[in-house]
Amino acid sequence: MPSPDGPVDGGAARKAALRMLDAVLRRGQTMDNAAQAARGLPPADAALASAIAGETLRRLPDLDALIDGATRQNLPDDSKARMVLRLALAQKIGLGTPDHALVATALPLVDGGPRRLVHGVLGALLRKGLPAIDAPRLPETVETRWRAAWGDEVVAAARHAIAHRPSLDLSFASDAACDGFGEGISLAPRHRRLDHHGAITDLSGFNDGQWWVQDLAASLPARLVPATAGNVLDACAAPGGKTMQLAAAGHQVTALDRSESRLARLSDNLRRTGLQADTVAADALDWTPQTAFGAVLLDAPCSATGTFRRHPEVLYRARAAIVEESAELQARLLGRAAEWVKPGGSLVYAVCSLEPQEGEDRIEEFLAARPDYRIEPAPALVDGVTPHSRGWLRVLPGMIESRGGLDGFFTAHLVRTA
Ligand SMILES: C[S@@+](CC[C@H](N)C(=O)[O-])C[C@H]1O[C@@H](n2cnc3c(N)ncnc32)[C@H](O)[C@@H]1O
Image 1 (tube, rainbow, N blue to C red):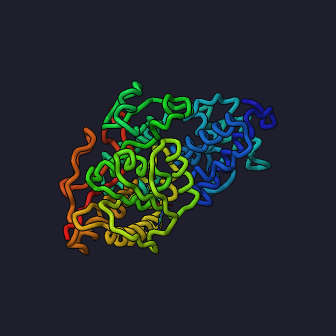
Image 2 (image 1 turned 120 degrees about the vertical axis):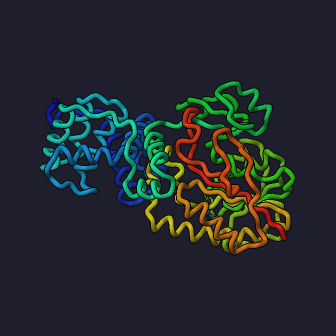
Image 3 (image 1 turned 180 degrees about the horizontal axis):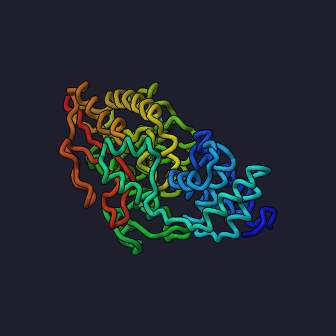
């Protein structure tokens, strides 16, 4: 084992990874925001920093168990020593980093007594040999919640899913572009799934704006909007995956979002794909449209726990209080959106969440309060995602696992009857 004072390789990337982990776990930031910690680094180092922080978050409870099994010292959750050990072990288990590089890059991140402690714990664990951790545990609170909601099998599938990099799903602006793309498998119209982990700008058709990246599950709500809807409001639209689907399907789309910066990304996406939509920067809780819509798609802000495969940090941010707060906002947004639908029109509700409070419970509560709405039973849009007997689509970990799985999702199609 190299000395604690040995040469440092990739030190800047590890320092950035440490700052990212701190931003996510202590300050509750998203990984996208935390990635600012790598600003100014060469792209390869920034990518390494994100990969290390991401692997750490995927396996955190198991890494902590390894650490606690190797020392009698009680290392507080946010102590530098624990953070550095987590990063080092994640690199070994998730990225296959050689032992000498692990030790040489971990030790300079801590000083004094903690450095000796890190050296000792890491050395002991590496000498013993580390397990593979193919199905990492999720945070206990999340496992308890999901076990109660969905059962043991779904928790086991989620453990499996979080350890594996999801494939890349593309949505296409036209059937012809999708058919002509040639690569990957297609699991729904205008969809291709690829095993591609490099830059998306390298894929054919990017510059022509023929496609955009969108998990297949996230493409389901726009597929529920009837072809005859006409004018459609995308009520929480940015960055615009569903707006582009709706525009590409021939609807006259109004895309509303309260975030100007996210709306700017939506406009960039429309420019790249050559698709059309009117954009409105406004808070849906205050805004009132001048005319009613044939359909309103409400892709509501949520805990986003369904996206844990790509964004493992959501599991640490989505505490029970956050889920409750989201559910309350969703109920208010649903109440507003319901007023903007023409009689006979559609309200499609969606959340990328695995929490029933943000999906099933919202719709049951809405239907109980709004006798002027009924559920339109969703069709089976993807083989392996069977519509629920209540008519909505609930996508869970484990579904179509052999074809690469899906993000967790919920969507329901409501029709205004009066
Ligand atoms: C789940 S994301 C939407 C993703 C988008 N539909 C897509 O497919 O690309 C939720 C969006 O709701 C927006 N939002 C949150 N609260 C809002 C409100 N009160 N009024 C309007 N937009 C809101 C957020 O800025 C965010 O862009």
